[in-house]
Image (cartoon, rainbow, N blue to C red):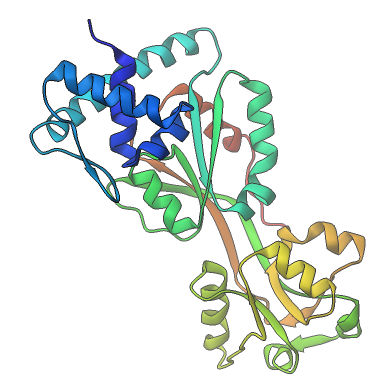
Length: 302
């Protein structure tokens, strides 16, 4: 008799490439994962994995031969469960959401809470990483939906949707530099003060530098950070001028801990977009989450 649980463990290990990661995803112990693989190998009479120092690798004459068929079978079974759940107007299963820590905190937290209230039976997994990694996880079936800094080039494996949030990059200061408020400043004026920027090769930093170069201005940071919260803390304590999406600083701006400067020309708009695989039949749990964003029309207030 076919033991589907063994095949689910096999599929998860193959996808994750690691017993430890598979155990974490399945919420079982690593020895239990290892034992399940050994049991399935014994039933099939062939080794399914090569145990490598870097992880688990499918064998050419075993694991690779059955992986695609197992993947198709499990997806078909998941589809049956989803159809039955949809008939009852509810969602079940697991929803894996990928995004950066900032996008989770400032953009998605409300939607995730709303979704949980609507569909409490769905297990939600939050996968936090930078946008390029989220795209990689999406393509490798390690997350179901990704929220990334735009633009992202489409390819055959996934599609990016229209933006769900516009970001307005602005210059902010703490009380130590609040005397700059009320003045129209140029990009060249900013160069006279300590500047805080995100680290190189981030979308925010690349967008900022490209824009400044287009006006013949080069602004070098005094401090580079890897977190918007850390930038806000340093700017609040007088470390200099920060460049941050206004949407990520609304609370401190409202509380009077940060002050927005009038810098001309204004920085270009950026956006957060949704990325999905090109699956023509996504599960109901995923469709229900995507539908939450269709209910709101994105409007740029400026």
